[in-house]
Amino acid sequence: MYEEDILTLREILKASKNLCVFTGAGISVPSGIPDFRSADGLYNQESGLNIPPEQIISHSFFVRHPKEFYEFYKSKMLYPDALPNAAHRYFAVLEKEGKRVSVVTQNIDGLHQKAGSSRVYEIHGSVLRNFCMQCGAEYGVDVVSESDGIPYCKKCGGMIKPDVVLYEEPLDEQVVTGAIHAIEAADTLLVIGTSLVVYPAASYIRFYGGDNLVIINKSKTDYDRFAKLAIYEDIVRVVEDLQK
Image (cartoon, rainbow, N blue to C red; front, side, top):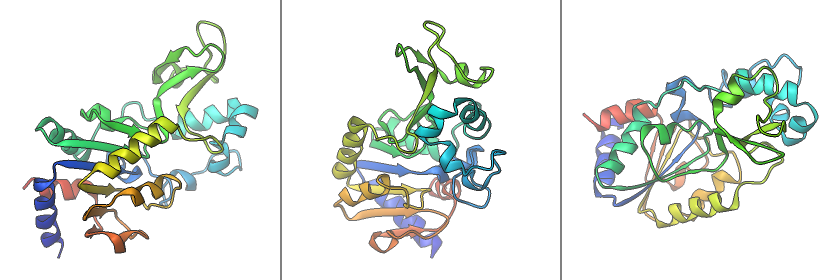
């Protein structure tokens, strides 16, 4: 059955002219970045604060307790040395070969861009971008990761904030609009490494009206019944088998 699914997926991708790849944390796990909800995921890790991680990475906690926020953020959410894996590279290569590929990602690690993908909609922002809350000066991830405690702006002394959407914060409307347009325009929608339980992001796949919805995830999702293919496997193995 798995071998048949790979053959079918290979034909779908070969025929696709406008591919949209919707990715979650599962695509970056092989790069050494933990997901959120698995047994070893971020939400099940000990923070040392006796506070749920979901609360620590909220806007109100960041404002009230920036020191504790950054202690958790830098130790649990920053992986500046992580590299794209075979799955990230695969979709970047498809784009380089002339196929139109758009990536809509819930991830904040920037690995799709590192791999070479150019049309990437980061719904939840990126750890690679940071800005001063006072003057708006922009900074890379090194300023945060190498700071001693709270990172402050070198220009005005204001506190620096990651360009990451925290709990209680709205999504960027321009990014959301671009993501929805990419999903609507796709002839194939490939959903990878996400349990599709994080809203509103998960709801965006409802804008897809085509016939080729493919879900690749290690566990089942509520959207599997709508998919042409649902493959329960690690995405890196799937990509390696597609390339054989």
